[in-house]
Length: 158
Image 1 (cartoon, rainbow, N blue to C red):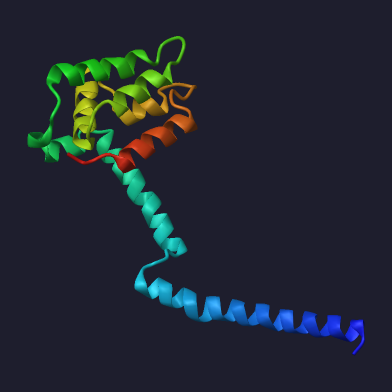
Image 2: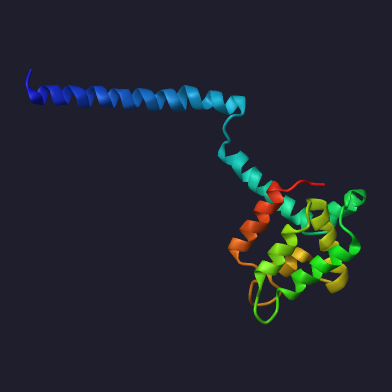
């Protein structure tokens, strides 16, 4: 057999093998893993993002606190201190690290929600609205939102 015929044979066999593997994965393996809940489809991934947004909205507002007042583990003085730290971080020179640090020092999501309540009581502005920016300039940049969202997703609720 010539080298050309041998090469052609390997190309054909390789192509058939790739087609069989693609068919096996998309036709058999992927549907089974989807049914078993081992993988997420596009709709589920979008739903996860929506749940993350709801999580942020609940924790950066008094909603979670109002439902779980008995689960707060920080004092009103500590909540006031953290709320003040968040507020003074948006000064002439934005110091987002102050706000992110204050949020990360709450200890739990219900405590963060409590700080959001104290922040609203002090300033009359919702915490999420304040962090998004109340004027032409955003207070929090995307990297800081990523840090906050990461904290919210990994922190215990109570």
